[in-house]
Image (tube, rainbow, N blue to C red; front, side):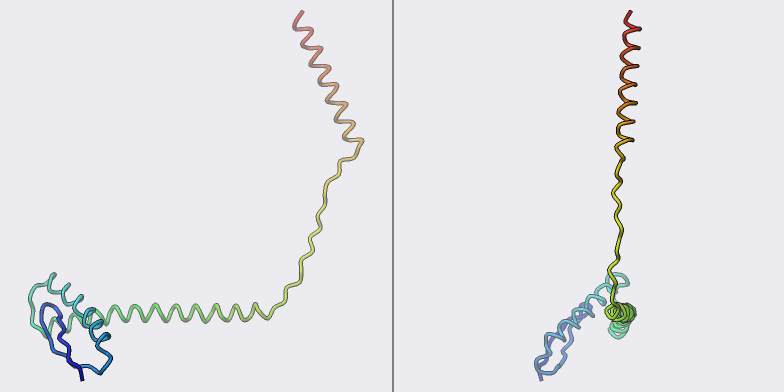
Amino acid sequence: MPELSIEIGGRTFQVACQEGEEHFLKSAAGLLNNEASTLVEQIGRMPEARMLLMAGLMLADRTAAFEDRAKSAEAKVKEQAGQIAALSGATAEPVQVRVEVPVIPDAVTEGMSEIAARAEALATLAEEKTAT
């Protein structure tokens, strides 16, 4: 059984672990060391048991928050999976949309042209009278 030397909060500990789990132990010790180092910086030197207890509680609090977020995410995924299942069974009928293209009758076009011609004639007449 391998023994590792780990450092937590400035103190060194000898810890044994199962073969092949050294990496996981080092990772866990690193997390605990980060919390313990934060405590030592904020509070100063304290008894070993208190430092380990406080660092463990801080990690437990963080873990509990992650578990709550994971449960919430799992519930949301389950809800969305239900919605997907409900929607995948539904068949959508194609929606037919009637498109109407406005057509201006020739009489209206001719009437508008006549009005425009008269307006231009009046404008020309007005210009001639103001010029003289």
